[in-house]
Image 1 (cartoon, rainbow, N blue to C red):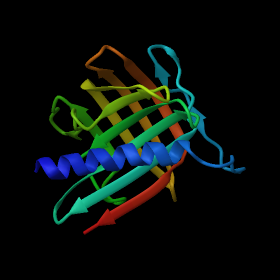
Image 2: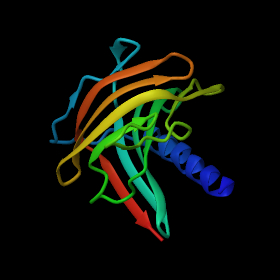
Image 3: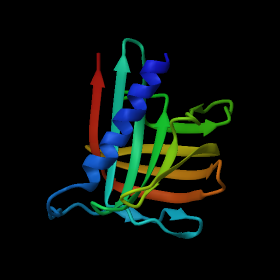
Image 4: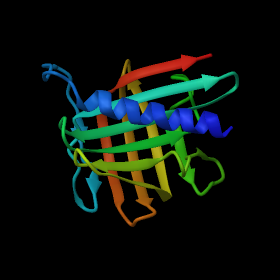
Length: 167
């Protein structure tokens, strides 16, 4: 079990690095709406992704919002119990709330790096709502507090990089 959790954490960190090291900015015609705030300040999102991984009947999805450049960045990874595109839509909470799916407190994390130092903080409490609009377009609404007191509130609607892998 510990190996699986470590594996999932490594995949999340790898996605963050890949999403922030693009060679050049691609032009897109898709529109997005970002009003996510970190401690009340705008949290500019460069890349939004959803990656679901399962091994047998167990798995999770990571919803990641990243900003920054090749040398510095911030990433919010939200880990939810659903791991297929068909089941990711819904409401999640931690601690557990009746009628809502589970939001993983340990794998939901905020990472801040400046090229040499990496600081991380896990989820203290929060709620997330995921709506699948069409194709790779989703709306994710969040109200999260991390163990170090950092808060994330608001919603993001737009096209995500989406990948689901089932073994």
